[in-house]
Image 1 (spheres, rainbow, N blue to C red):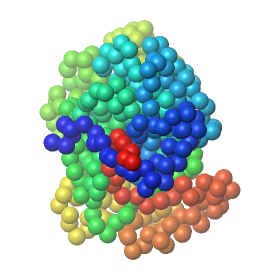
Image 2 (image 1 turned 180 degrees about the vertical axis):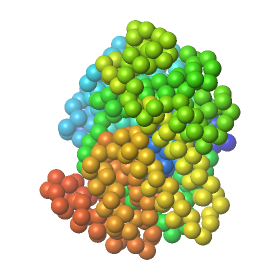
Image 3 (image 1 turned 30 degrees about the vertical axis):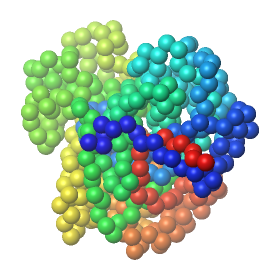
Length: 460
């Protein structure tokens, strides 16, 4: 099984790759010596399955061409010297025996430190190798295409190689998913998993517990197009993301208690379904029977669960959700169970490839966006406008992708309508706004399933 193998090492003549050559020259200029290797981790686009990985449910992403690429030279000191080709990201140095990660104000280097620390702790490295690193990224930041997680994965891979250790792709994905929590984001592992497990030419159904990936062949005749709303959203810098995680956790506990289960040990909506042994459709019926659509106050939750406010804060709420006063449990749980069903339906259509596959997949994507917008409330006016424009411009399906509250949409467009689609979206969304117009080249592009993380060694 490919997932049990380590990320591949590719030998490339540096002179044949202009980006490698440019990065190498900048590295030499910065550090006075050549890099020994390069670590690459791709971004991803999630086709369907939003905000459900941390609930234990399968998701359906693919890797994209845009990536994080780091030129690396291990050094004998225990010091990390980290630099970025983008001058707006400041240089950073740190003694690797004293890694501190600031949760309150995450900076770009904080994500690199997450990956580095994850590997260091996994192997209990007493004398970790220092590194000179120069990072180059082509994933638009805060766009919902996993730039931060790709940086975590790239750092983990670079640290692994520098310290001459080996792990499988699955092990690396699991470590990088856990260690991103050093920065305070309670994600579910999709981003890191696809970054390591992706293969060119196929999307993947990513399942958890245990982590595994299954190829999903996308229909011919359709192209997936990413469009950036140009609204930036850093999920670690706000509480939006973790509030949703906590709402799903609270819904799990109240639903479990209503069914006489050991609710204190149930944390995920997916695990609750497994314990009850019922279908996703039956879980939606349970949500409608037990939870009310009106927001729950902290006091009502404590009364329902029979716990004190102190217990709620200590055992359920995350660090940055301690002050949240109301929670929308009905809407969040209903989204999760319906979205989990849409992921399975999407894969089934891809596997069976009926004549109307593109239309069926488009319908599922559209339903997903409506649920993200109305039930999970993770969209924003610009994303909704962009989805509407994409559908009017010829997309069969269009939805937000990634955490939301900004970032990108992904649209499925018939291949023979691609050029008309791109022109119309440019005219209706980007050219109507000066800032968007400037960002347009990096904001609207067709994509196809790309390859996963790898190490590049230059050959002479």
